[in-house]
Length: 222
Length: 198
Image (cartoon, rainbow over all chains, first blue to last red; front, side):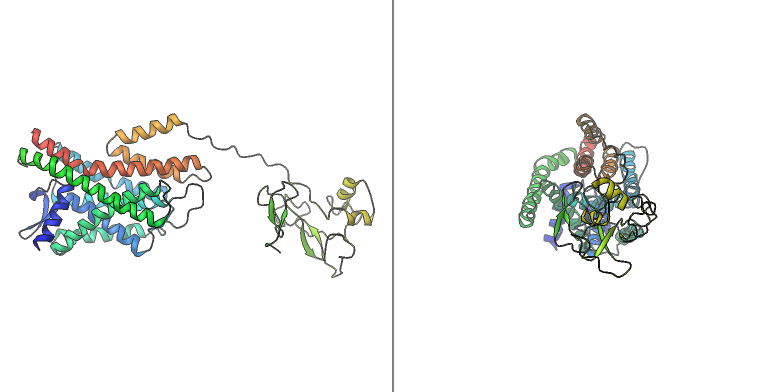
């Protein structure tokens, strides 16, 4: 349990300030990231699970413009909530942070997948969203997960795994997308370089966190 | 129809399936074989044609088939130019000969070529200056800039038959997503610094 908790905390320290009063608590255990980041990575996790279950990780067609605009529009509340609360205009709470974060995280995989697979010169097969009701279905699933996280229905280990999985899926898929666009088409090499690239990014983030951010946090007593 | 063997389009010269009724490259209507309406074997009369005569295959479209999509059998319109203004009469005018034999030894029946369609003006490619401007604009505006960039990128990716816009759209989408995730991940650095300053 200690090792798992340490891994969760270490992963959370790469990307989050980890303030306890801004994080969801499960009894005396606090989630490794703040409520906003929990929402973001829960959203990313939900969308990736949907794409995996529907076998659409190879989809090439991007979202329709109206759907993309609607999903991107729903990302704005988190930006507004974060910016306005940082400058002290509004008071926010963990519930708002969690749900605005969720709205932010949900669309990202639907944008990343066609960004990697899109064929510029040919015909694109398979859309990430095929029927109109899939969008509200994904959002409802994400909202259900957020409610369960907020009320402590999801065990600490499962909540931590959702965060770590969402984070790793996001980073690895970003690296994969960049590599896929560099015409590195051979699949084995692509996966190999994606693994190496992800490890490099995580190592860089660890060094940045360990030698720059943590000393800063200690210095400012955050 | 035989789609395995190939022939050359008599209009544009591209290699096309032998059974194609329309050239997929230039869109020209090619001759298509049909059964003889009277059930007689005309292969002996028509050199180069085995069991059928030819006609304009665009029934219903009107513009390619001037007689309203009716099938023109060659043995119905011999010398009756009024029934088929583009048939035998046209062939005879082209060859400078007249008579049944000359008709059958000529190219089977070429429909009048469609009137030239005004070519659709190709979209102007995006200028490099505009691409640089959009990329910089969407990059330097935190948050909202990347969101606008994502929508713009998807609009460009949806452009049909415009590889320049599609290519730029993909590049814009990837760069905006990377920037967006990086800026969100690094938000807490700003938070730490802001807390320290205050």
